[in-house]
Image 1 (tube, rainbow, N blue to C red):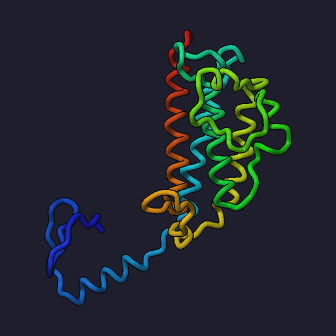
Image 2 (cartoon, rainbow, N blue to C red):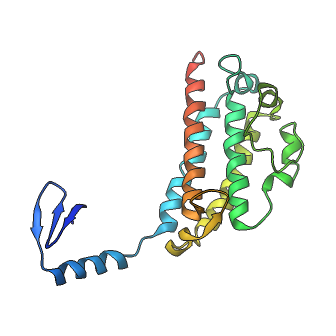
Image 3 (tube, helix red, strand yellow):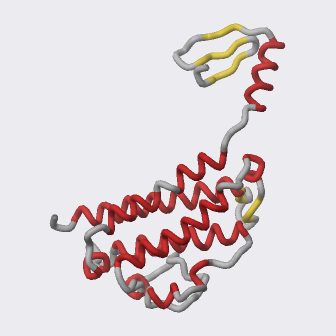
Length: 206
């Protein structure tokens, strides 16, 4: 059935501009069917989040540490910082909605990036000096940290239901942030920074 673009009394304007006349009882029945239609939210979120690690792998593949650490211009963010930041945001935000610790504060991850295990340090408000202080031991550490964060995220997403998305997870905003909005925001942040990192990679001589 084409997507509904506009509704009228006794009629529906469907995709393609076709107006289908319906009785009031038929319209109520259609609304009931649409509202009861099951949506596999877990599969949708899993597909979205599973796009992130392969893109990161493609960016880092074949790069040496000096290359991922080099900013494309003074004051700009290098690949290392961009990938670290997107993994930190996912680790922080997903841990919060799960009610668990960040992976960052365990298993020596912070040391492997030359940083302290400060759970509040996810990259927001970083100065150029802060950006330069993010120094992974190797390019592969960027992927390893993202991978372990991603695996925790997808394991949790597998149990997600449509009803879960309406849960309020952050009341500091007006309107308050729901779980659904938070999950989309995290994925959106990751994909934006992956695009930036891919652009930086593309600026380098082949």
